[in-house]
Length: 141
Image (cartoon, rainbow, N blue to C red):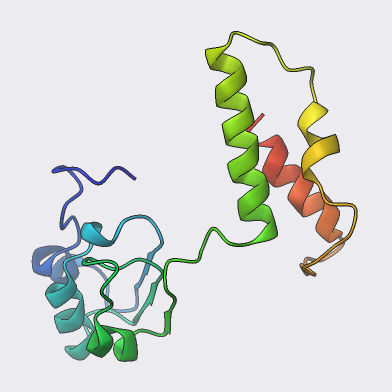
């Protein structure tokens, strides 16, 4: 999500007042999308069920009271996972090739981006972790 005027404080008191009380806010895009004080009001007034935050409005400063109110709060690390790195690398390679007008053969990125050794075990019914990463990478090719 772009951090521009259209998205600045997209989630504010007015929005939190309109949403269903059982909803959750999950923000891993841009901190400025959510107005910090409005979110604290929504959480303390039980307007929303909870919040999961990976980004903060005034990064690198983290709002400590909001951190304690959130169900889960992390210091902008959502992209630091095996699939996050694979997706980011795939997007970079795809965009670089597009800008150089170089056509990638189908599936070529899968051979380079899927690690031979699994460092993270992902659990999904009847799907091995390798297949989950392949699918994530393939979606960006």
